[in-house]
Each structure stands twice: as structure tokens, then as C-alpha cells.
Image 1 (spheres, each protein chain N blue to C red):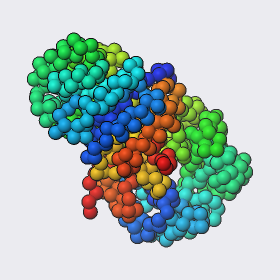
Image 2: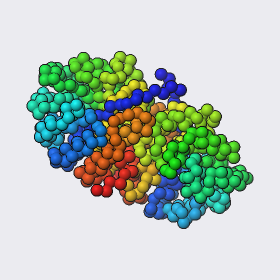
Image 3: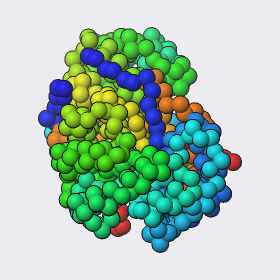
Image 4: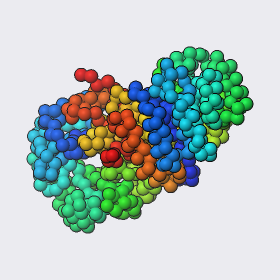
Length: 303
Length: 303
């Protein structure tokens, strides 16, 4: 039975953004930098570190400009990116020297409407000037396509819809589509079918998987993607991003859990697991509660 | 790409034994019966409900005889089994009317020595009269082969060793080998290689997978097995069996997490997920802490 695995993958750490945006507590800017430094010390090089969203909507990330300003002295070969939900956010990102941004929309109409207050077809005209302005400023743009496995309002989303929207986003100038299982409903068979549809028309290196581990299937789904040629995976330190009121609830797939499995399989991630677990311990201390990552739970995080 | 899945699988619930044996707290016999009833109400039909181990070693299961006596009135088509670590345990099981038992040994020499105080080759002569006595009493015998993915003392275990021991246990009269990733170290590539070795000589219906979710890869590993023809999986309600002092630490793969993924893929388990989650809530109430199952963490367990 053939079983081809890539020799290495790219892990995109999103805990500081997708994780912390779900936290009730505000993590101080200095502490966010400590986390960022710990992630870099572990070898991560792709880190989405904040979102230039209006502070009213996501108070936890209200320090995006300050944080962005402070990372400008970092190694320029690192990919330190930020989410930019609109033109105002993009201008803030440009003003603070961010070199890579991400936009997002949903694969399902209702989620897009509820999340960004526009239908999907109304979203394209909003994105056009954003992509144009980012290109003008020399920024790379990544596109998140949320609810690609399922929508909390509409249920399953048709793979052909995900393909159509992915193609459109790539045509607009996105260098990569990060396919999101936003509510963590996907299963491995569905993952295979979705990716079969997408890979019939798109090269694997234009796609990333961004799986939430809400129901424990994120790693299994990523393994299907890996086998099918996907080599970019978004994860969050310690599984940050679960509901803070549900102990054990996971947000994104925990970076440590992905790194553990991949490295053991001989797939290089560039990440040092021990150092990553130290970062996970720091995240637990800063948030004051046990986080969801499984590998992290095996570690004694005493200070 | 072909992707054959079975139409149904057999889920063996081991939470009352493998889960509770790791608990510091003693769950009262009446409460164990409530859990058992809740599991049965959810549709589970294969349940290992206790171990006839000496109470000194596992005080949490000191009520094995009482519990076994009380399940004797249950539907005889259910498979309510018990672990029997030695002849004395087997006699206790027979005396209380248990119809199916399980024996266990380790695939690695050091773990076997530390766990049952005998080398692997010294274990066969001990098993022989146990298998003979079970056959005489009309009991089915299942065999657990622990540390099949890795040993805490020796590291990785060679697939050929696992095969050799599985064959011997089947020859002795075990109807099935439950392959254990006892310390939850396995990865999907290793799972594939291990099962390739085993399935080169054994039919898939003689093998079960018993994966601990210590590092979050249990479901991914089971999915590899499913694809390769394995149709029996051991799991524990709510992921019971993690270290009680490490919040979020998982024991066995949580039954709900397996059932969720399988049912969504169209693979029948016979289990009603909602009813199973009710059982998970009951387990959390009885143990007084959040348990590790991911799907369970999405449920509001208010009484």
C-alpha cells in the first residue's frame, strides 16, 4: 500500500490571534510578546500574531497596533502576519509595518452574513480594493475560507462551493487559501471528499488546513490532508481558542499535538517540541487555567 | 482514490474498567451500575465492566464480585466482560456468572516484567491453564496485548514481535487480540506499518485497537485501522482513565469522539450519541471533574 508523506510541512501558528480572540481576559501586550518569543524560540516561523479588528468587537486584541509596532525589529525572514478584516484594518497593518495579512470570509452564506454582515457576493467588491491596496503596499495576502466543513446555521457545505470561492480568492490575489473547519465538525471521510474536489482544480500548495478540534477529529482530518498532499496546517499553541467556560474544550488543533505526530512520523516541522511545551506552559500560566492540548497535559508545567 | 469503509463497527466500552482503575476515588457500586445502565441505554452492547484483580492493587475495582453478581440479570445477548489477570480472578469471574473474560500481557519484555512480574516467555505457561479453564467453563477469552506501539521502558516495539505474540495468543484460544497503545505514543504512520505487519498474517477480524489518547492521536490512528479493515475499537466513556491530577489528560480514546466521527462518516456504531453524552455527564458528576472527551466538552452537562 503506497503511503507518501512529505518530508516537511509548514505549521502556521494562530494561537495569538485565533486563540486569544476567544479569551475573555486581556493578555497584556508584554505577555503576548513573551508568548511570541517563546513560539519563535521553539522554531515556529509563521505566526499570525494579531488582528486589526475594531477593539469593540475583539477587546482581547485591542493592542494590535502596539504589538505590531513592537515586532518590527524582529528577523525580517520570519512571517509574522495579522488578520485584516477590512480596509481600515489593512491601513493599520500597513502603518505598523506588517508585511503579510489575511482576509476572511465564510464558505456558507449565512455564516458570512452573520460574521461580516454581508452576503458572499457582496464580499467580493469589498475585497477587491483590499487586495489592490495590499499589492500596492507589497503585502502578501492569505485568505481564510471559514465553515468549509460545516456551518452552524446551514450544516454541511458543498465542496463545489468551497472550490468556487477558493478559485475566486486565488484569482483576486490570495497566495493561499486556509480552509477552515471553524466549528470543528468535519470527519476524515468528508475531508477526503472535500479535498478531492479542491485538488481536482487547484494545486495542493495553494491550500492550507485550519482545523478546530472541537470534536477531537482535527488531527485525523489533517492526516487525511497530509496524505493527499496538503503541507500547510494552521494550529494554535496549547489548543488556545476553546470556550474559556468549558474546561477541556479545544479551539484550533493544538500545535504540540500536530508537531508530536508529524515529527514522530519523520515529517519535519522545524519545531522543537520541548521548547513548544514550555511556551504552552507559559500560555497556561498567563490564562490561569489548563488548556486543551493533549501533549501539553502530559507535561508538568511547574514554574 | 479508493476509500473503503466498513458499514458498521463494534465499539467495546472499557471505561468502567480501564477508566475507573486509574481513578483515586472509589465510585460506589450503585453508581457504577448507573453508568453501566446509561451506557446500555446509549446502545453499547460490548462493555468490559470490571477487573477481578486483587483489591490491594486496584482498590477502585474492589467491588468486582458484587458488581458482577448484579449484572447477571441483564440481557444475556449483551457482552458484559471482565478482566481476569490470573486464575484466581478467573475463578471469581466464573463464580459470579461472567460469560466473557480478558487476559493481558505486554508486547515489550520490560513492561510485562513490571506489570505482571514475569517475562513474556514465563507468561505463556501461566496463560495455558487459564485458557483451558475458561474453555471448560464456556467462557470466551479476549487477549489484550499492551504496549504494542511503544513501551515506557524500551521505546518502540517491533511489529514482528507484536505479530508473534498475537499469533501465540490466538493459538492459545483468544478469540481476538486487542492491540493496546497503552501509553498513547503511536502515530498514524506507525499504525499503518504495524497493521501491515499484522494483517500480512492475520485476518482483520481477529484484531481490535485499544488506543490511549494521551497525545491526541488516538482517533487518527483508529482511522488508519478502519481504512485497513479493523472493525473493533476499544474506547472509554468521556475518555475516562487519564491521570486524575492532570486536568484534560485523556485515558482511552473517548467513546463519544469515536462515535461522532464514525457516525458522521456513515459507519454505524449502534450508539446514540446524545444518550452517550448523557452518560458522559453522569461520569463527570460522579467523578466531580471535567473529563477529557472533546465532544463531551461541547455539551452543557447541567443536571
